[in-house]
Length: 220
Image (tube, rainbow, N blue to C red; front, side, top):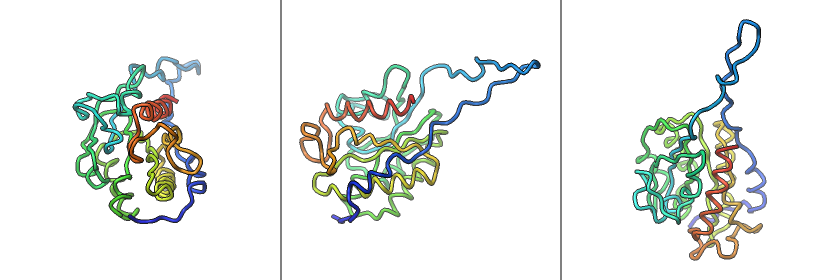
């Protein structure tokens, strides 16, 4: 497994980077200079598609069809104003597999959580970045939320370094970066107690915290 040298504290310092949510379209001006409030008011829930690996799919019976299991963070995000339509999430998937599987969608927002398996397979960051860009291009959503990857107990520094690269990538493209993994991560880059049983995947309790963080970012 590759050993990336960036310390977790330095990497996470840049995770606040990213873009704000897409601004609302300007309201139509009336002849008297007043604006129509209803013209800028969104209607209906925010529609979302997600692309990821086993952390996203978890125990979902049919992720692509919108049937999510309690072990998936999506089951927490998908409620009260957020409608996750499905997407593409497969256990063991690399970013290259995600790029090959992603399909166009009319959803408002694309959420991507990707990279753990790239680290485990020693895939260079440059390839991971190109694959994530390909996922975004394939889906074609107006807004993109890029999530940090969860801790990797066998190599916390590698996960921290990957997250730092994700922050830079999001900033370059004007995507929103969400450090959702902060909800389950200790200051030294490992898992909070009770948040993972194998050092790679969150427990159901951990998935709830991830989903809550992502949901909050989608709505605000």
